[in-house]
Image (cartoon, rainbow, N blue to C red):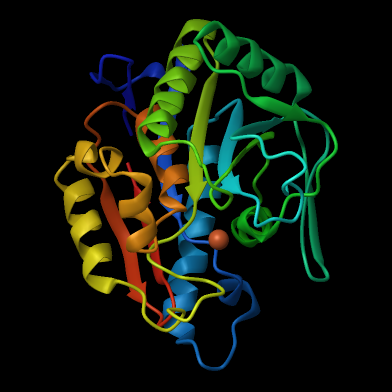
Length: 279
Ligand SMILES: [Fe+2]
């Protein structure tokens, strides 16, 4: 496994000197957790295995923390206050979906270091020590906990659903800032972003995910052409049901300017493109 420096060069041994040791993007649809009979058990098992792989990478790479980037589906942040980015700096980290709740180790010291690092690099995220994270965190973390994830978790919540959202390029730049912080401080992290792919929750297009767009975007990322994704406008992302891929851009940016991804799995569930990619 290699790590990527801020200029995009890959380095094989930065696990000992700080940096972003690995990146994943995964889906987080509630059905992956609830496993309704309409969904293919074999495909759901592939998603679960993807989440478990993230936990194993964290152990293999002996990271100081795992950054998990996901969303708030209007559970915590509504029109009274909608931060574009929120860093959770408390301990423990709690995520909940229906009756399933997970508690993981946070690291206020590392989270506050990241907060300082982002402020120094032109980002002003909100921060919270008191937020129960939603299913976009719970679904992947449930399986990572089962797999024995031991590293502290640093959650970042992105505004994916309340317009105006941050541009996807701004999200990519945030990832670059995270990488710069990790390299400068000598802190080694892994990063996993959750979201997408194409889906239209709560709309008349629920049963019509744009599968062609999924394959198009995956093709870009497998060829290392992140630029095509991060140059999309908010309207373009919305039109293909990919508002959540703002989270992906953060993880991709954290691993370099031109990251080439490996596809672990993709499945068109009929309402959402489920994917696991590593880079
Ligand atoms: Fe979602």
